Amino acid sequence: QVQLVESGGGLVQAGGSLRLSCAASGSIYSIGDMGWYRQAPGKQRELVATITSNGITNYSNSVKGRFTISRDNAKKTVYLQMNSLKPEDTAVYYCNAEWIKGPAVWLTNYWGQGTQVTVSS
Image (tube, rainbow, N blue to C red):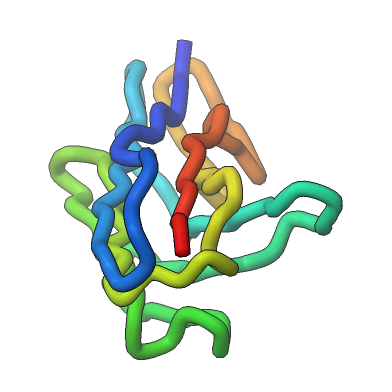
């Protein structure tokens, strides 16, 4: 069974840093674009950053210059380095894969279960 498993969330003070990881598990050949999204209480899920399979990145204006997305295709893992965190970054962060191809699966718009990030002021 294919899964996207996030880790690295937690509680941090404003100005601090966290590094999120999202590892794909299961029998997988390849993964398309990957991204991080977040959802704060009472708000819609929003894009944070995306990265293509060959490393082209895109960021929301709210995190540009503070967050860095990267991926290791061999490890089937995407990362989000978050620096200079602000209280408004508090949210559940979700990993997304545009598509996942394996010997027995072809999944599209696939999500992880989310990891909580809380930034205290």
